[in-house]
Image (cartoon, rainbow, N blue to C red):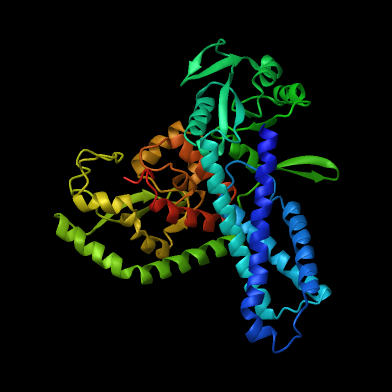
Length: 466
C-alpha cells in the first residue's frame, strides 16, 4: 500500500513540474511573441512546437531526477527545495535554449529570462500546493510510515512526541525497542515491543518502514548488527545523534601523512576570513535596510511604549556574546520597570510583569527590532545563537557539556533553535544542540533560510513568542 501511494505521489509531482515548465516557457513565448519574436523570426510551425515540448519535457524529467527532486523525503524544508529548483531551473533554461535551436523554435534572450523566471516560480508554487495536499491527506491516514524507535529514554520519547505533534509528516510510531525496560511498558500510549535482539521480528510483524535509532553511546558494532538484521527487509534505518554527538561528528576530520591516517580538529566555517566577511556584509546590509525601512514603525512603537506605561521606551540588558564578552542588548520595553526586582527569570505565556502593549509587541517580536542597532555596531548578527544573561550562562556552562562553544560566534537576533520553536521557556539542552549545529554547519544560504523562516514564524500561531 505504501509503495502504491509513493508511486502516485511521484507521478502527481512529475505532472505538477511538467505543467509549471510548459506554462512558464510556452506562456512567456506567447506573451512576448508579437513584440519580441515575430519582428525577428519566422512563425514556427506546429511540428517545431511539438518537437520542442517533447524534448524539453524529457530533458526536465531527467534533470529533476538526477538532482534528487523525485526522491520523496519527509520533512524536507520548502526553502531548501525552492533553492534546488532555482538551480535546476537555471540548468533547464540553458538546455531549453539548445533544444529550441535544434527544433527550429527561436527564443530571444528576454524570452529565455522570462521563461526561466516563470517556470521556476510556477514549479515552486505547484510543488507547494502539492505538498499542502499531501500533508492534509497524511493527517487522514494516507502515506503513513510505520515507525520503530530504538531507545525508550528521554531522546526516544522526545522523538516520539515530536512525531505525534507533526502528523503531516506521515510517521506512525508503533513502539520502542529498549534494553532497560520490559515488553509492554508504555510511554504516552506507545509500548515497548522488545529489545535490540528482537529488531528483525518486530520489523517483520509490525511491517515497519522506518527505524529511528535514538540510543546515545551506541557502539558501531551494535549499529552494524541492526543493519545486518534488517538488510534484506524494506526498511530505512536513521540514527538520531544525542544532544552533543553532533559536535563530535563535526569537529573531527581525517587526513593523512604519507599514507598514515591522522585525525585533526576541524574548524567551523566562520573561522575562515572570507566567510566572516560574507556574514558581516549580510549583517550590515540587513541592519541598514531594516533601520531605514522600519524607522516609522520603530518611532511609533517607542512613542506607544512611553504612552502605555511608566518608564523608558527602551530596555537595555547585559547579555553574553561572542567569546563570552558581555554587551548591552537593546529591546523595546515590554514589561514593568520593576520586572527584575526579584532577580532574573524566564518569561512565561501569562507573565503578569508584561504591559498591555508588551503582550502585543512580544507576540510579533517587535520588541526585538532595536537589536538592529546591535547588529550595526557589531555586537550581534542577524542570525546566531540567542544571547543569554550572564547569570544563566554561568549556570548552563556548568551543567551542559560544550555549552560555551555556542559563543564562538556572534549572538543573533534569531537562530536555528528559534525558528524550530525553541524559544522562551524551552529545553536549554535542545536549544544548545540546535545552536551547535548552526555553528558547525554555517553557510550564507543557511542564514538566508533562517531569516525567511523567522519572517514566516512571526505570523504563525504557537510560535512560543511571549
